[in-house]
Image 1 (tube, rainbow, N blue to C red):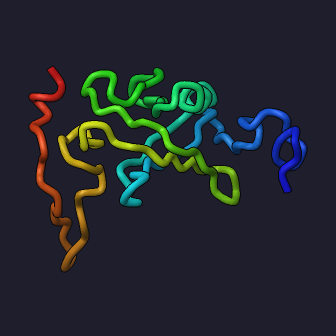
Image 2: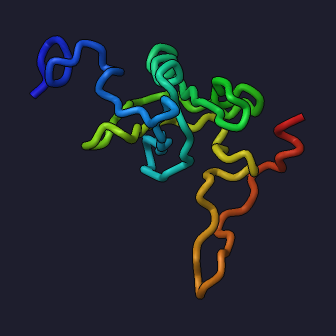
Length: 136
């Protein structure tokens, strides 16, 4: 049961998160209306705090080793509706409104556009906008 000071006596809501050895936690972005899983990324302590503070998704880019404000280059911002954690507090679920309808850097609605059928990966979602038009 949650107390006034936080969950199970934890004063800072970020302290309950079980960060991995690199200080990261996986984050799932889910469309708040459809329930569709849009993408998975990583967050560090600062990214999660900024997401909450600014009501928009902020991630940690492992390849660039810096904060990544979703949509900073593409304009495809994820407006935050709700933050949840799983039972083990080691995965974050962001319920978002995907501005512009594109979450994937490939120009698709979601990153999960490949499905295994008859032992082969098949694409089940068309490109909405060519990435060369998104990332100049």
